[in-house]
Amino acid sequence: MQNHAYSSRQLALPLASVFAAIILTIGTLLGSSGVANAQQTTASSDRIWHDLKGDVFGDRVILVDTGVVRIEAPKRAQDAAIVPVDIYLDPAKAPDGIKSVTLIIDANPAPVAATFQLGKDAGVTHLSTRVRVNDYSYLRAIAETQGGQLHMSQTFVKASGGCSAPAVKNQDEANATMGQMKLRQFPPKETMTKTEELQLMIRHPNNSGLQRDPLTQYFIPAHFVQKLSISQAGQPILSMEGGISISEDPNFRFDFTVHGNGEIQVEAIDTDGKTFRNQWPLETAGL
Image 1: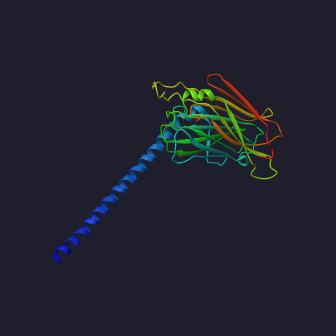
Image 2: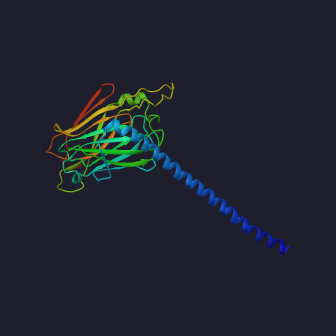
Image 3: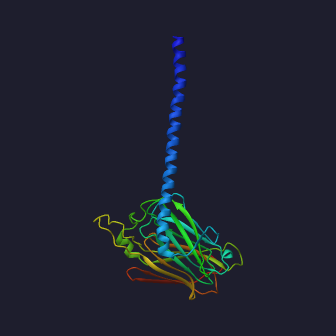
């Protein structure tokens, strides 16, 4: 009996080693497959960009990772319909100034998410918004300097289905509040500074045209904020031409250089031709 038990233990040891080896091999294969799939997905996004960039920028040279512009987004989105994106600009690396930033999402049905024109004396160094991401894709920010140079930063985001994801609000609720705006002002990060940080929130369904009505299952027509302008006392801070990739209830956070005590003025125009306007006093001491 004792010998039998000893033999069982002897047998168990090599079996355990075999199973461990099998598990390790499977894990290695799955890991290799995951890396291969990720590489294939990034390559697919790059192919889209290769075909797209000529349509957007022609044959102009695009400099990469020069520090003029930097884009940040989560590597894996929690909600593909509301993916936060931050764009940082470094004026010190573009002495002639930065006049615009184009945000591109390679794998989206309409890849050009938005183009932001920056006021010449606005001093914008940070801009954030929320976007829809329809499939694993590079997000690219391409900044154009006043001298015409193009600088690009990119980041890869794992997300899918953002452009067809159901709206948070039903159409009746969205229509009832459409065009309402809220402006939030943040306390200055430094004392005695002329830089302010604002957040603009606009109520609008920003329908992509790929969402379905939950009752009829018909596609909801595309309807989104197409143009946006933000100024202080008539002096441009930034403007946007947007598409279906900007999320429901558009949200923009940005900094700028204050010029006097003039009011902040906002005008938004959607694809139905509806115009929404609002203005707010600027609390130069912060909130």
